[in-house]
Length: 106
Length: 251
Length: 156
Figure 1 (cartoon, each protein chain N blue to C red):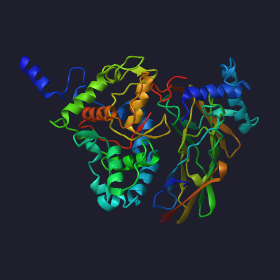
Figure 2: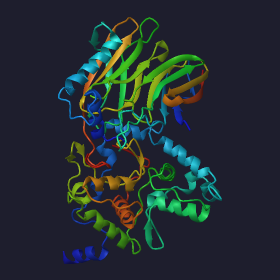
Figure 3: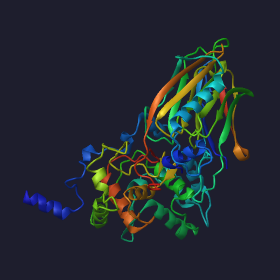
Figure 4: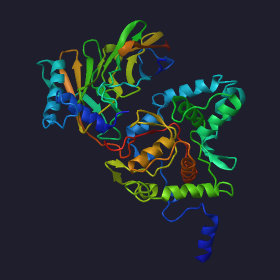
């Protein structure tokens, strides 16, 4: 089950810069490791993370193997209006995770 | 002087020469860098978060005939203080929290025991331990526990492995110094199960102890063996009064 | 999980093309440096990369190279006309130099991104910021990575 956790303030003042912290449960297998018998363990990582604010992309990140397991991505955005923040993670082997958070902007 | 020596001998599990004085004890937390400490402190980004979420789900899930919650209700209330007094005695012998949980599973839930270091067992011990976070570790040396604590101490002070080192030599005599570039902590079991950066995942105290034993090229004790649990008991007694940090982050 | 020793041994294997369980490539230092320079050039093209504006916050002495908290902040008003478009993070000593690329814009409010990286060995970490006016700015930090003293796998 694609587990993720997102921390977003429940409310903010219009124009305030809010901090968003996101965590995804993922091994981030690098594709550089070998088994005991010498077979290469194939890469299996999260490759992209997108944050949309009422449907508009406000942040995007491309990840590589050098991002540690259980990736943390923290960033900021301006609280422009009330609505929904949607977070999407995509990766190798069809990995897909989604999380939504509501924010009230006064 | 002689009376004092006799008193020491009589009471056994007391501070001995070579032990770190109680007031000088420091958690492994203090040997980490600022950024690693921040990882542990921020609940939103502590990498053990998923284990806690899994633990809460498992607590409420019906396994076999009933869930943990059926008997124990809200863990935040009923499990407060529990992890801080484990390992505890059962039938005169010390058992650790993992064994206690498995005993509940097999005897009361009629569900199969979880394997040591399984994702489920780590999640449950993390969740139960979390309910005691911030509380002082409460292991007491009394008539029932004394002999076991002393047995654990003997294991802690015994040289072992090809490198012929005891736990005590690094963690009592040389804490604070660098071993292969990393600071040697005092070795207090204040935050288990931990998210260890080296493992990039969760692990129990027994896993960490096995790492150390392999490090000195000794044959590590099996998971759940009497030696392991006695060592755990000694370590928790050694850390008595220090705050439980479960789930901690450690390098 | 990968021990750092395994990671380094594999990294040699990847660059010194073909040889299974290769000996340490005598040119590995130069090759890694070249890979880093190539990765940065791919991002910036011919544009010069200036020092300044960017602050790369990474511990100089790393507790464990498997998980290193990193924060990059760029001094910018983040207005429609003057903002950071992207932040690129690189390392020198990993098997491949890219870590993460964050795409920002005026809606970010502040030009900052935090993550946790894997850093295989002592060397440089480089953050490059791409501004809306087409200029590139960077900050470099040299970090020290040590191997954990007690591992599960023992010695290779």
